[in-house]
Image 1: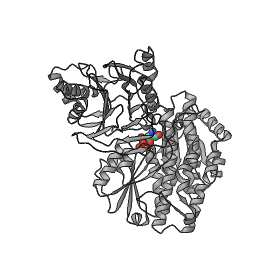
Image 2: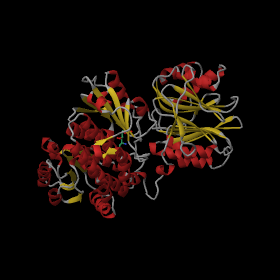
Image 3: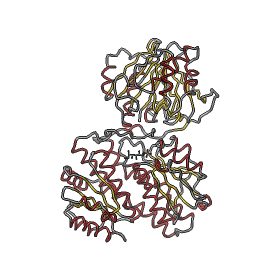
Image 4: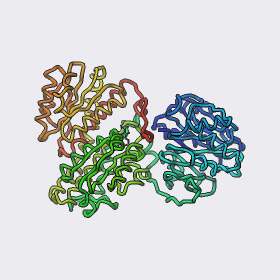
Length: 615
Ligand code: AGP
């Protein structure tokens, strides 16, 4: 997903501010980068394909260091290959306006044809350049930058977050707008700022305005941001305080964000759960509207929509909620749900799970559920995100900023939130007793040291040895049953995402229906098995694999599985309902160390973006 930053600073030095912001957004994945600054009233552009370092090199001549206003962009190519010419910012023909864009202009071809028929010559293959020419043409007709942007966006179909600067404007202004991908603006002591992610703002101020879809904002030094709609009507948007600490966004002593975030998971459990537990009542209190007994008793069915890792948390939520609250739960890929013309039962609560709160498919699925009459709720990690603002009730996870593209701590936070929700639902519906509620709440409290034990030197070196021994394998199967079946899916996704090896997650009971044909010594089979009612079933699946020469790695607390396997990671015992939170940690570490041994870019894996805000 592209990254956008912008700033107007009292004392100049805007280039370094833009670069700092872009560095913080690198984790989102990109293939080129660029900046446009106003230098003595004229627009100056520098842009390069490849990593940010290449742009920094071009800017190191210092020729733009005094500039006070500018915009910056990291591009994740949608139209046109990564190249210097296709990198943003883009300008109109006269170089009057420079513009950066995240999203897709769906009607770019017809707009481009119209502009070319009027004599405009294009310099790139991008849809974004169409926007730059539209705005330039409106300014040539006498409109100021803000009006020109509004008039141009009125002609656009698609989704966008954009920022633009123009030369020759009375006073220096940046205009930005969003419909779909996120954008936030802020006024700090040293200037005014915009960014597609709060991470790039909190170094300047914690008081942030999150734009809504259809908003256009004008930034000018010494003034609060002015927000209007596309039609020009003024709107007031609240300023929200962002509590994240900038150093949380740093790597600290870890070589990669992903490893730091794996090790943060015990803290994430505490931050997401501990102040919501009510041991005396054997219950949970989210402290926000939408989760009272009365409201939850009105729910007859739950429909979960999510993508990727968040969907795996959704699958676990189904086991938890059906198991502890006896509420029927459906789980759907958001990208499937939104197009399958779904039928929802009466009194359905639609629950979207998302780390970023900006995933296009998840947002669209939740909006569809709402039109079908469902109440909406969210489990989300970003306070100002679109999902949090659109859902009628939200359980915020407190994982802090997750920079590694491969989600780890946010996943654990989502599973913890789902556990809390299952307890709350069970107590509200009267199917979970006070005693049982107290047991579950206590179990959650006891989990943290068990997580820590899986992150200690010994456990990590065990996992590193497994990664070392299996890195040449032809492929990987991950097997699990019950609440640990989604952990098999998650383990496979982690390995795929960052080690680029073929891996599949499967319900262990499905082996005999086809996948067992894959078993051979060159295949490694990771079997997730926790002590509990299903352990014996999984053991026999493990035996079936070994009998065919497969290389078995057992992960979990079931000691007999450990004894039967070629390699293993023994996981501390805990309530089966909480076992996914422990079992996932060795799998995250196996994927991490496999990728590290291969020397791959762990935090920014090829082809991936941190948040997929386009379809
Ligand atoms: C997980 O490791 C991936 N990065 C990806 O599957 C991710 O979980 C998915 O895109 C959903 O993102 P979200 O949680 O921000 O909605």
